[in-house]
Image 1 (cartoon, rainbow, N blue to C red):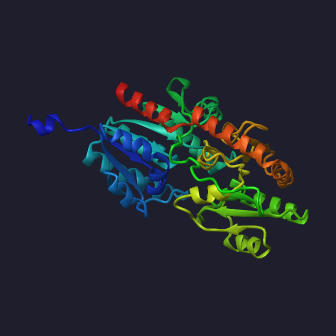
Image 2 (cartoon, rainbow, N blue to C red; image 1 turned 180 degrees about the vertical axis):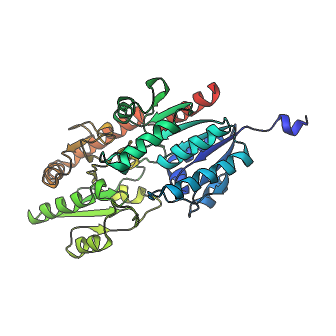
Image 3 (spheres, one colour; image 1 turned 135 degrees about the vertical axis):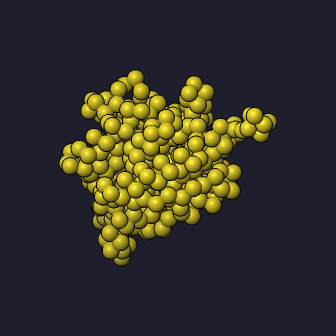
Length: 377
């Protein structure tokens, strides 16, 4: 055996539904792990693929539609991953989101490669107990038998998987979200608030269940009460997602003067710095929304629904307010309460929110969990 073979770093693979999600949600983890391991990213190609390569990762593109319900296309994903795993021989694999979790875990098991499945949220397939839910439950149960561990981002999702007997509790680990870099998301240059229009901000994928329509309706309620407020929305469309907001509907909200849509932002910090309050009235099956952690870390008070994953990031009446699910009138009521607080009271809320994020969601806590698992396995 040559010295090069003996000294080769072990290969750790990250498999997800987009290079964008790997870069935005797991870059701090990857930067830390690549000091010890070679890192391979396997995901559909997008604008963030080259950025991951610049970070020192290898990137292998795959083709699949995460929204497709066609089992033949899903079988192609399984075949693609098997081919890559056979050729690359990763020592360990982290799978993210439903289809990589299912078909990636199966492909890894076929070569006895150890893997972890990270359930970042139950998403659309678990929203209703229909045929799609039954198929997802069956496939998850089969695929996750061979995974070393199954990680969740909140206790409720973990509870559903144990109650439905999809995975045994012995395999479960609950992370504090996917973590947030509180140094990067830090309001070093706060704007002068309290002057001019009150500024609400919502940053999200443009899905109905993320509460975009609830946000627009609440804006309409406040506008009719003659509040001087701006309602900004940033995020990207998922045109082929069955829950996507229609572009025509968004255009009507803008024409009505309810929302200011600013498109997709690679860096949300300039928007957060200009906002007075962050809003996410989601009734989606969330893990822990990163947008809430980012906003709280930047010392913004937050308004969010009393929904799984969301309520973990707010202490009601201390770091913001929670509102009822799918209720624009209750959201408008909480928006009105925030507007009528003094600037000092809102600042106290924002600082308490940052303290909560630093204590509970700092990315170093998540990195430590990756380290512990890799060291053990």
